[in-house]
Image 1: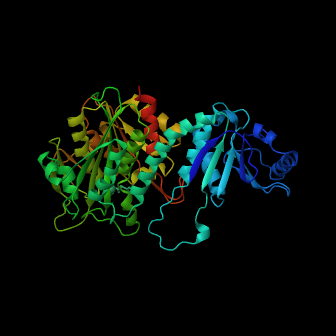
Image 2: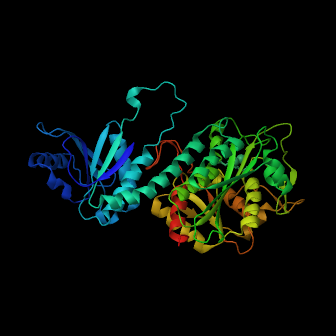
Length: 494
Ligand code: BES
Ligand code: MN
Ligand code: ZN
């Protein structure tokens, strides 16, 4: 889909989209249409009780005599609540209505909006986010089912401003798309080494890409991560992505860590077969790291960020680790692995240690599809956030709210930490069964240095959404890329 920006001039043909704010009959753009068409629009709005409510659309077939194919009204909701996220949702709703048309012009001049160029850019980005498809493995497809939208032209005053703003959003959506691709790919295609190979493409964006294999990780003492991968034919990898965009390239970076379990069978603590296929997206956190780094690099964000992905495959095998095994992590702490299916925390433990030792980051944020318990607690409406730092937690929560990727903070504390005491090692990798998301977070915190601002995002409920979300068709959502991009833009860019 080609997206362009131009000045307002109602086209003579094709589909015309008119955004309408709630309560307003029609914006300034309506005045540019002929009287008869305007009459048709008013009558149709009345008949359909279309009042410009958020996410509502109304298709109108225009009277004979004009060459326009259709006019589509899209509701923006109240002008004062129409922010960038609402604009993206409106663009996405519009895409759903228009994907079977080829040429669409949006005349974006709705009444009462401030900063229309910025909103127009977000509307276009929303349409593109919703247009994502993953069809590479389909050899037969119904022609009518395929989207046809080729050209989306956005008209607005100061279209040059809109275009400029949209360039950054293009970088961001590019990031979301690579995340969605990585997450959607099956585990026979994306495994630790092939994940790294895909990520190497970011070199073209200016990202420094490095990978450590098992020998290098063994030298570093990463017994926790390596234990998880030891039952797999695939070699485990630690992927390091660096974007040094700040003026001072050697200033301490922000570190983003992702769980990259490319397939989670549970290991010897094998999962039941129903739904096991979902565990191809157990690398969702790592997928977000790659998408975020692409977005930051493509928009040349003035910030230093290092992204780290612990990439493993959790398989049952003659060489796999057993329930009860004790492993020694890079931090020196020992872990009794009572359940080989609680593997994400083992992987993250060593990556968190490595991130802090090597990069001395300003702060560290990890993302992981860590627990089923977070889905029981929050469903797919919020991801869970756990943190040792109120400012960091508040900044992340605010960013999530702003982009529509919401976070809900859960408590941490010694009373939960006690639950992972082991009789023979420094800790065990599961708690007693209650508050499973919190005990998982307590486990991670044991690998965070004192005074290091840290937040853990449990994204198990939001990485994949079968039905789709406002900005994503069904499948992988890319949740987290827009959130972290916003968090960084608002708090770390000079
Ligand atoms: N990857 C899973 C968590 C998960 C479950 C993600 C469902 C997405 C959907 C994780 O590795 C896991 O298996 N966690 C266990 C932990 C338990 C053994 C303490 C869980 O949540 O059941
Ligand atoms: Mn597991
Ligand atoms: Zn897992």
